Length: 83
Image (tube, rainbow, N blue to C red; front, top):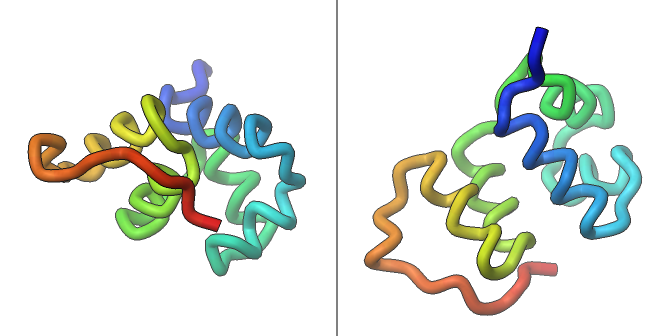
């Protein structure tokens, strides 16, 4: 079974930020097992968490997360990282 692109992107973001699963989970208000499920492709993050991931990712990666949930990219800019 191939891991979905969204799961690979969640994992890549967490690693880019240098966070352990438990720390990443805390930021999103979920459990460490939830992050594990996101990363292995068994459960997709919520719309709200995709938006937060885009905020954390910064340009240019932010656009992928925001577009995933249907945000109109012509209406938003990717500037600062949420912390």
